[in-house]
Image 1: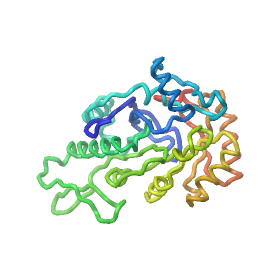
Image 2: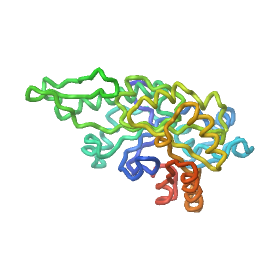
Image 3: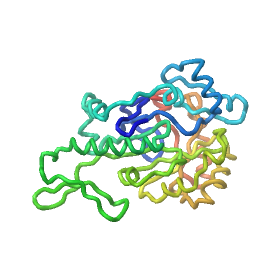
Image 4: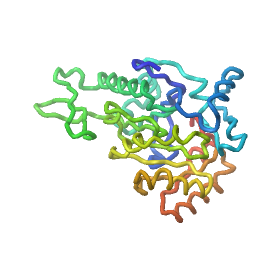
Length: 303
């Protein structure tokens, strides 16, 4: 990872298929590397990286899932663990222009979703912030010698602005949405340019040690933002009980900020798993949502 480049394992234009932003046109930037290995042990991941190369988008079953110590394996491992190239900031801008969505991105009509891997790893945080600065330099008002970056003193109300006609005007803004596992504290520079934080805390069903997957100060930091959600992937009712015991109750997470989604990876499971989630939503008064991209494309990656 480098702070002056983006370590991208894949990037593509699609529609958000999960959580409260479901259905919104979005450009996904999947950054490489992760601090968790859901469904497998670090030793197993290191071993298979030496022994085999996964096909782009290939779904695998980790050793912890095989041993019954996890109920699922991260579906993006074939991306962030095997693929990743440090690309200059201009790369994304060129991609947006080639695909005819640059104006949509700059106005916020097409959201930019930073995902992974884990995009809040510190070097990734620095790179995203630096990319945002680079993007500002491309602003339509850059030829105005009075163009400036204006920060307010009210924390999350920070805004970029430009001066024109003797007054400050908020610039046309990209909409930055990030997907994180909630285990890394988000520093100010990144925190204040994020428009939405999608946090997917990991439960015991991930096979990850509790100390690695539950980081209270990182969770509480997310709750300082104006626009956040906690997305929990659940397979059984016990998962929901654990969610309340380990996260919602001790950290005082408001229920209206919680989304439950089914653990699934194919259309064959879609209706049964969606039905389960909605029944659980009724029982526990939570927001239950499915995974729209699986219904549409029968895939979990790159769609």
